Image 1 (cartoon, one colour):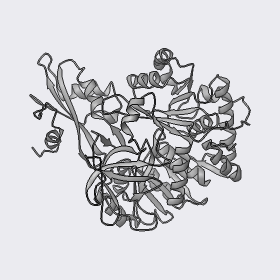
Image 2 (cartoon, one colour):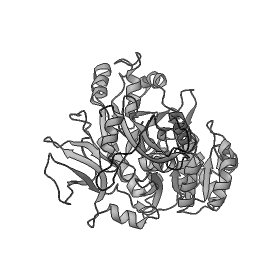
Image 3 (cartoon, helix red, strand yellow):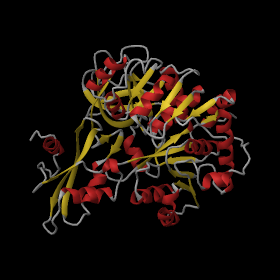
Image 4 (cartoon, one colour):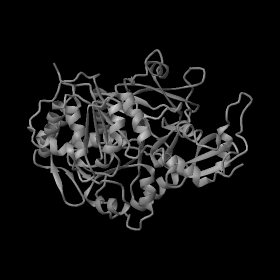
Length: 503
């Protein structure tokens, strides 16, 4: 019986590449493919020794290190379900994920071990391990003595490989269940569509707790046997310094605006590059054009989501159009109107998709899963799309009340639920407004109840103590009442106009 474990695909390349460099750090430190394979074997042996069984979840909230990537590979090998968590999440957020997913193992930064221990214990987590930003911690210490050989656990194509939590419009996060086949099929499609070859070198500056940095970037590199220049975070000067050694770079729009701010970015620094991609948020046409003028390279925009990986892409060989997300990849797609019927080309509708990359459903949410899929198997993305006269798809809006700030998804309802708990606040509403660096900025509107004297800094600090920084409002407006329609629904379009100074 064929082993459909995603790691089995990577292992073929790892074995063939042997002692050649898999990861290179700016410091000069490097890891060979053999070393990556050996270390993931030790990790896998240790994780299974803790009692973790295939299908068990492993929650991970750690800094970006090669060791964190090795942990991910070890989870694949052992048939465990990898659950990456944004490093900006605070305890209140972590508590929900642990309670909902019931992981058997939590891996966190050493400084967070004590604060999270009570939460983890309450959620039934059996084992807490640590991994710091230097790649050290109890995980490393305990796994060190275990053997390097580990026989990759056999997995069926629809067995879970990972769960990615996406914030829900109702405030409750949803765990998108991704199978080994979801991930492998999308990786194969991208490697082919973006013309990856073994000689490519990926310059990696993305976080590794979501689909873009972990599944899109690294999976392409692993499947192609590429060397990865691995940066612990995005820094424009470091990226420009490393560009001459690379051939592929993947980023969010914020990366490109900051690169353009540097006088060091020019055609010479990009002379060895063959591909720049952008995603996770809309790329401004101005940024698209400025980058081409300054570097001679045309950014390839693509579109995806946690539930399906990459869905569409501008062509590798062909015109890349500013403001477009290109053509469908390995999906069947349709654009549907409010009446449930497919709209004509040029008209706006909701994108629905079906294909091997589309997720299995939401963790422990059968009713939500059922509501998001049509009877014929199409997944309702919630994104509003228009197909132009050349066949290119363009995202024109979101039916779900979503803000994308710096490439991260922010759902207003989650922030509103915390603001409404703040002493002195009667009611709140959160919207996004355009931001030149982050794409969109979070803006809050609050109605006070008169019992407390509240200023903008109080609101910002309250949210900052509860939620990740990218969810914290950049501006707070105080109103006497929220604009509503006859049905009592808050008119967020009016609030967006106020936020943008168009009232």
